[in-house]
Image (cartoon, rainbow, N blue to C red):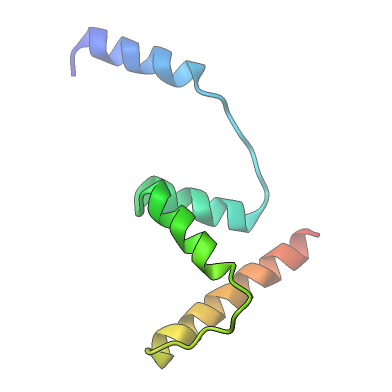
Length: 81
């Protein structure tokens, strides 16, 4: 990377707004979208998961792990309240 490119990147990063949050769910979604999934896919998943219907899962092991992860996030949220 050239010196000019580095300086432009630093100037760009300095203009970006900073944001702080102690919410573990916000941290989870931030990391998910920053490192793993496009924002559009996450938006679609959130919309699908907000249905009032009970979900039936085809992979019981994966569903049980998802439930454990959900419980852990909920415990973290309760501790922060």
